[in-house]
Image 1 (cartoon, protein in one colour):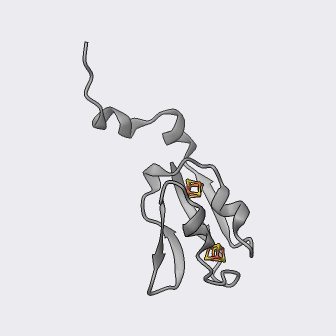
Image 2: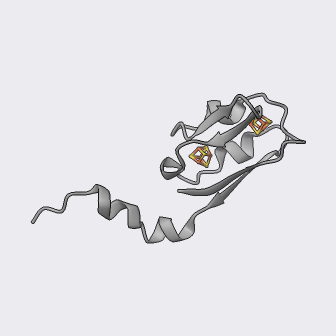
Length: 82
Ligand code: SF4
Ligand code: SF4
């Protein structure tokens, strides 16, 4: 789970590589601002492939460590069976 996908607008060259490499399809394109953003942050696996493949080093993955180790959201999505 990603807390924030930080994008440096000055550095971003709008190549959309980050969208292509995200295997979880977390990232979408903001047409208005012409930058990528995390549309599905809960699906992010914090693999940082988007960060490492960005040719301009314009994207930074800020993980939500609390949610990763104490996944509060999981309890509302799972049905517990005994
Ligand atoms: S890979 Fe980097 S430069 Fe390309 S769109 Fe994404 S943030 Fe912008
Ligand atoms: S860290 Fe991995 S899963 Fe998360 S947005 Fe980037 S490429 Fe996708």
